[in-house]
Image 1 (cartoon, rainbow, N blue to C red):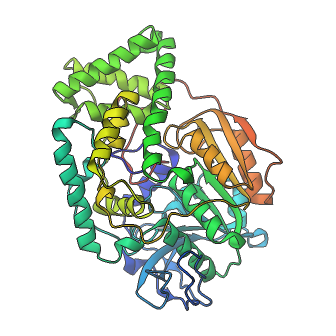
Image 2 (spheres, helix red, strand yellow):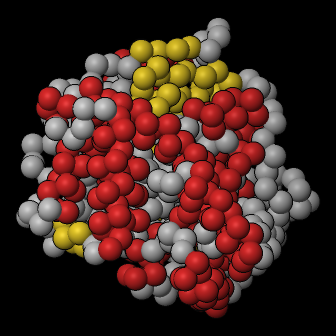
Image 3 (tube, rainbow, N blue to C red):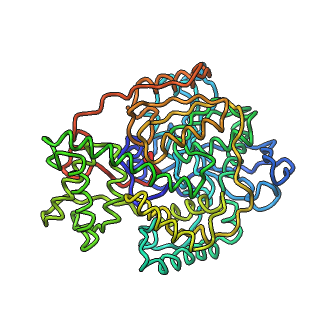
Length: 526
C-alpha cells in the first residue's frame, strides 16, 4: 500500500541500486509478442489464456547484466473481449542455473499495488538459495499500468502525491473532498477506458497469458504483500494452473481495500504499545523514558509541537501527522524507532539533526495504485461516511486512524467493471507471516489462510517488519519455504517458527540519521 516512504530492506536496497543507473524504456525490452487469444469467457468466468504465442528475449539494456533478459507481450485490455484493444506487459527473466534440475518458472510480484517487478529477479538472485535458483527461471513483470507495461498517468503533482493519505481535520475536510474528486477526475480524463481495466483480476489473467507465452503448463509464484492478494486471485481463477505458490505477508481478501487500509491503523496501536514497552526497558541506552507511559508522553508532546510548527529534520519539514506516519513505519523495528524518537526530540528542542528521508511516489505509481485500490472494489460515495469514520478512528487509533479513514479518490471513481473476486478454494499454497507485521498483520494472514483452505501458514513468532522469506528474519521459516519450493510438499500442519536474534541495537545503519531510505518499491516490502 503506497505511502510516502518505505522502510529499509535488503530487497529495497537491491532494487534501488538497480533503478539508479537506468529505467527501461519499452524499446529496450525486446520484441513484442502478440498472442492468439481463445474465445472470450463470460463476465464472471476466468478468461482462457492464449493458445499460441512467442516471446523474443534480448538484453534489457542499460547497465543490467546479460544474465537478465527482457521481452514484451501484448495482452487484451479487456480480457472478456480478447479481439479488442491490446496493451503491453513487460517481462524479465533469469534462466534456471542448472538446466538438469529445472522445475519451471517462478513469477514474482513485489507488492504495492503499483510495484514494478521487472528488477525483482536480479534483486532476489542475491537472496534466494541456490537450490531455488537451480530449479526455476526467475520471471519478473511490470503489472498492467505499471512502469514499462502501458503505464498509467493521472497528471498529479508532487503536492498531490505527498498527501496520498491525508490527516483528518474538520477545518480542512472540504478541501480534502475537493482534492479527492479532482484526482479521480484527472485519472478518468487522462485514461478514458483504460483505467477501468487496470484491476487485480485482469493482472491475474495477464499472468496466465505469461504462463502460456512461456510454454508452461503451470506456474510457481512468490508474492509479497499486495502480491499475496494477486496470487490468491490467480488461484481462484486458474486453480489448475497453480504449481507452488508462496504468499509472504498476507492481505485478507475479505478486507480489500478500504478495510485493509484501516487495518494499518488498528494494528499500529498494539505495535506502538509494544514499542514503548521495549524502549522503556532500554532506557539506559536511549534515555527516552523509564516507563512506557513516559515514552508515549514524549512522543505525543513532539507530535503536538510539530502540529504547532513543523519540525526541521535536516532540511525537510514534518508536521505532526508526518511524524506519526514516520514512527508508524518504524515501530516494528524497536531500536530504529527509538533512535528516531531521540532525533525527533532533538529537533523539537531546536538542535540540528540529519536529514529524514521521505518518499514521494511518481505520477505512475500513484495512478496505478489508485487504479487497483479503487477499481477492484466499490468504496463509499458519501463524504459524510468518511467524516464520521475519521472522527471515530482518530480516537480509536490515534496514531493513524484519521488518515486512513479520511476521504480518498476512490469515493469518486467509476463503478468497478467486475465484482471483487471471492477467494474460496482448496488450492495448495504456503503463507508466511511475521507475528508483529503491522502493515499486513497476522490477522490478515489468518483471513487468507481461511479463504485458501488448502494452504499452510508459517508464523514467525516475535517476527518483526514486513516480509519474511530470504530477508534474514527466520532461518526456520526460510527452510520451510525453500523445502516447499524444491519438493512441492507443504508441511503436514501449520508451523510456528522462532525469529532469528535481532542485531545489536542501532546496528541496522552505520549512519547517524534515521535507518530508512526512500525506495520506489511498495512495502519494501512496503
